[in-house]
Length: 257
Length: 290
Image (cartoon, rainbow over all chains, first blue to last red; front, side, top):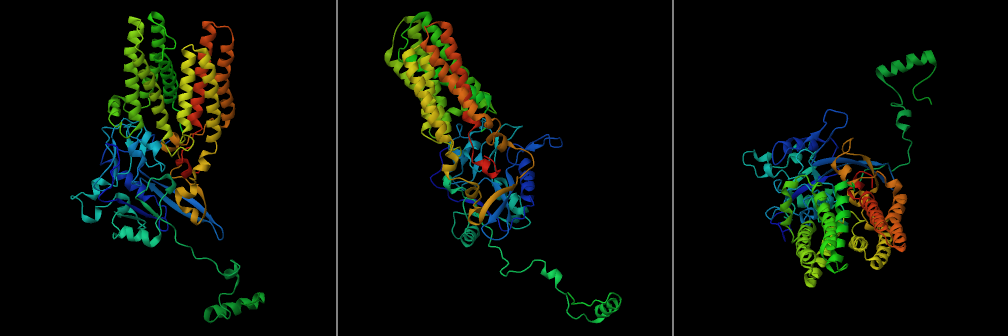
């Protein structure tokens, strides 16, 4: 049934720290690696070694330049995957019931054997979280690594989504955003976690932590000054001898303009 | 949005087919026997042909029957039910008209209503998408219904109705274009809201996730041909409305009527191509495009 549940027992999701992400794309690679050989159809590539490579990804990292009113431009790396929305428009448009949101944890999944590949759910998603696999002709999307997080065959530390497990910067956090006392909820509260495109009314579960304020140059100084100013006003020891010895040749001394 | 040939053919042909069925159901023309047979054959060829074309859009057409299951939440599923219901009811009505010379008026009215409901459900598939602000308007069902009724009147040979409805459809089309041109701006969705980075400054797409295109950019960020949109709009209006209206003022002949229908059909195809090609999906913002 593609009607959305009234409420879910948990709201499992990701918290992505835009301040910490270094844009290494490790999450993209680990996501593709795990999800191409586990839950559902593989994530195919077309012409992977040719002139026009393309393929299915559940997680992609954009990069944005932000120009503040004052100060230098900032570069923000921006990982984007399914936000497991509470009011997921991709679910309700599905004509077959293949798309659904789980009552127990709020994960949005696709039952691939019911998917007719009409693509309407991808049209309904404002975030570009769904991609039709060109080989299998079914809709692929982030499963929040549903086959890892409950997998008792994995050690405890691996029972998180592959992207979270692999992130070398600690920019991705996984947990229950429906529980106000969970680590992720407290992180969101402390850092002012935000929704993407709130005006679309999707109520995304995943939150993004905005970049922290950057330190600035609070004095009006010449950026080349450190290179022009003498390192030592009065060189001592070996440098002092060198300064005097060279000075006898060219008539200059350290500290001269 | 990518203007897929299968979807354009579907909405064009089915719209005309169900529009004609609506007029036949209302008893205009009140023909029986062979004449009725030809009218119903054309209507069914268009409606069913369009539906067949739409299955080519599917990745797994062999599972198409599953699309009947979610009528409670999905407009696409409702469309499937409405189309089948309209075709079945009108099928019985057609049997009465063609073989028994009977006019089962209530059945005809029901079939006509279902035919228009089918067009309405088709339009709602697009109208419901907040992600495509150009489509997300009550004018979109108006656009589809006015096109279907105008085309139906033309095909049914209801010249007086066709004149009026062609003018109405042309007006709705012009208003729909005008409203759609700044729909994305008015929707309030920008790269700033998409990234949440507007609080820091002005964001600009610096580097895409991958150097090449992907499913999203191919499907949702289609920009080819938009440069010619104004010229194509003019062509659409002239073919869909201008030429048929002129041809309808000339003394009736089957050749001229066929020309009017073909011109209208071509115009609707151009209009539907623009319907997709000009539609901006908000996901394009993430790629610094629209």
